Image (tube, rainbow, N blue to C red; front, side, top):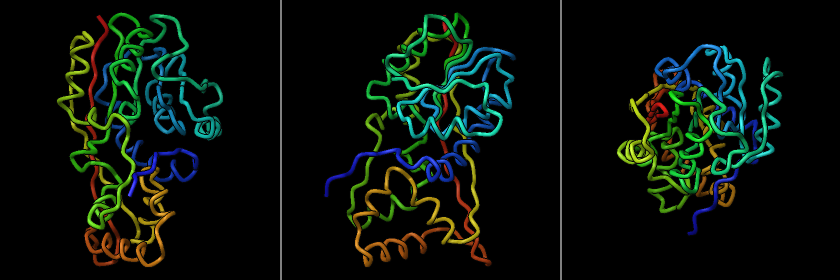
Length: 261
């Protein structure tokens, strides 16, 4: 079976699934970052604006711009409460429409593995960031089992179904992430692994939310009722559940930051 491409055409479903996971990681990521209060921020691949909102609330930026290639995601981001003074615009991560050294901090939250050429994406981040400004990213450890939809993906693998992976999935490995930052000439490079836990009331809630993952949604859409039921039972058996049926499990991301020379 051919693996489908990842499509971000359901902003509300994506935000309910990935937006929550993103903000769980985003909180501790921002605690870890080096940045100046009241600085000018760029959030590349902002999607539905979940992390952009955290930057605004936690970092008191003088200006914040979120860019993304998806108009559907950007429209959702603009509806977030309290984000009226934030700028959201369509842009390519490998060809940012900004002048050199505009931002104090540039970041990619769960995005770098979607950039066809991560090195080019990083070079653009560096170009638009001021000297001694922070350039940072975090990515789900997809190849290490840290992706939030891993319980369903593991079930698909056991049933010999293929599902979409980001085009630059190898950058999710910490060694590759670090090599990318080092090759780009950034200084004061730091890395961390961040693990977060999420709870669901029961399997039904887990399935409703997690099956909205862009990487597997199209696979499920083409699956017949019997196979989908088989997959659900398989996943249900593997998930940790409490006595009342609640589900709780962890996902983790590899994070990196460095300063522009």
